[in-house]
Amino acid sequence: EKYQDVLILSHPKPIESLLDKIMLDLLILENAHDRLRTSSYCPKFVEGLKIEEFILGPSKLGVTFHPMKSQAYEPTSANLVTVEVVIKNKICMDLSNFDYANKKLWMFHDVIYSIEFIKALSVYQQLEDCSKRALIASALACSNFKAAFYSYTHYSDRTYYPDGGTMSWSKEIQAQAPGSTRMHTGIIAAIREAKLDVREYTLLKMIIVLNPRKLEAMN
Image (cartoon, rainbow, N blue to C red; front, side, top):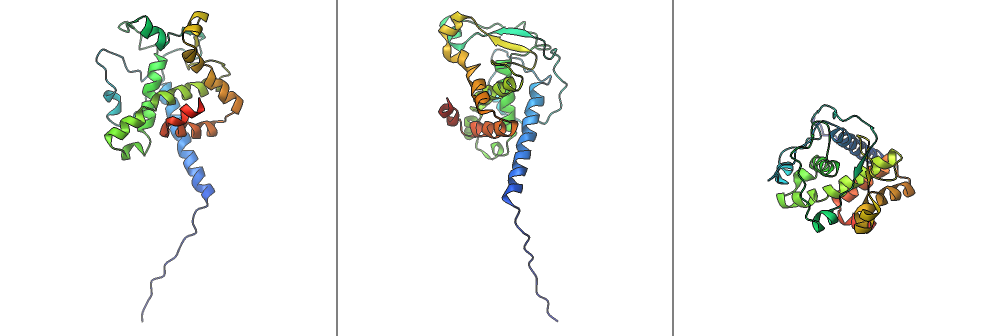
């Protein structure tokens, strides 16, 4: 008696199911990014520190850290020192006495957290080293967008941080560096006008990270 193999083909998954799975995975990554941002992970900036020290090694997005010690939502005002002003006046930032245990240099640490987010993407592990560096270059745009959406969800019209700090600047700084000050309000205004929800924001964030030139087009 002869038997023939019977090949049973399962019905393909509907495209909606695949999209839902992708969206769920992205939201999980986004939640992990939030946790890292408000965690005790706060790298110190010391002389000789190189970007390679953050690029190498596995992502810290899945590492469990304690919550940051900063008192959450304590209203404070952080004066903006723009890149233009730093370069023009040759300002040297002395961080030797900075209280890393209780404070964060948000504009710098947010870039580090975004690097860890990018390293957690499956596509990152498939790239050559030179391509990894190119993708990591999206960290600045990613951090700006992340901070803007957080500010928007906390009803702020300018950059607002998890410890309650809010960016502020004088009319003089506004005149000297309109581009830098606009960065702390313009993206938030665009998000508010578009009325982005968390799913739309998460998708747009991935587009920005994987296609840095998209941000230039948005601007």
